Structure formats: structure tokens, C-alpha cells
Image (cartoon, rainbow, N blue to C red):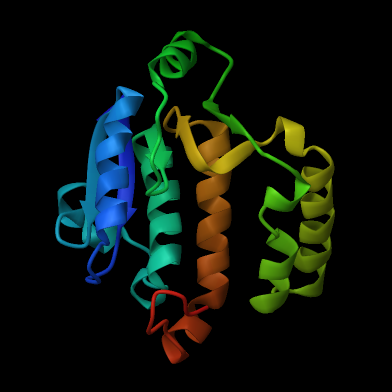
Length: 193
């Protein structure tokens, strides 16, 4: 596993539409080694015992989000949503590979509204007031600086960097905090929150 591996996640037992199957085939345009990780082959890449205990209670989209962080931190390489891509990623991956001071590459966030609302997430998960306040400031700062932010739908990371460690730590902190609520009220459908 390396920088030229592009991971795509389909975490449920629900059938993939023909449109999505065609999109995955088009990911070969990236010049990357496209790897579709599903519930059926996840154990080939991850020791299931290492998954956060809350993982099984997440909705399917959030499972993919969790795995995206896991793979970028532990393995590096690329990630893409199941969308058609027509451009090669190879020049960008080569720049990342050759750089000693860059940890990630990706497209620039399109506008401030594309920045994930970490504040809303903090409120919905009933994080402590101080955490919510800090997340509000972080979210507003990211919105103001969206032109310096990598978009969330397609990117590549070097593994084990301070950036991926911070991402991985924050994700696990939030899952630790929400685990009991998730156990009491697990996601049943792919869009459950």
C-alpha cells in the first residue's frame, strides 16, 4: 500500500447503482491503483479488532468517513468519493512524493459553504460547551480561509504525518464521546444520523 493507491469505500450491504459502478471504473483515469474497500474485504486491510467500538453503530456514510481517516493516517495514498474523475492524479502524487514539506494534495475547496460544519457536529453530539465554542471558532476560521483548504471529496495524504495524527485523534475523541449515544440509538439506514 502506498501513495499511488486510491481507496474508495462502500461499507454497506446495499447494492451499488450502475451509475456508481461506472464512476468507480472511471477512477482508473486517475492513473492510480483503485481499491474498492467493502464490508466483505475490509478485514484484508484492517484488523477489525482495531476499529473503534462505535464503528458498527455509525451510518454507512460515516463509516466511510471513519475509514477515510483510518486509511489516510495508517497507509496514505488517495481517497475519492464514488464520483467520475477524468484527470490523472499522477503529477500531483509525484509532487507530494518528492516534497519534504507537503503532507497532502487535493483540489481547493470551492467556496466557504463547502467547509464541513464542525460546530454543528459539536452541537448535535452535545459536546461540552468549551469544545463547541472552540469548534465554532475553528469552523469560522476555515470558512474564511477556504481557498487554502483541501476539498473533502478527493485527496491524497502521506501516512503518519502530524496532520493525519491530529485528524485521527480528533475523530476518535468524538467517537469516544458519542459511543454510548450511538450504542443506544445506532444508525439503521444509510442516512441516519
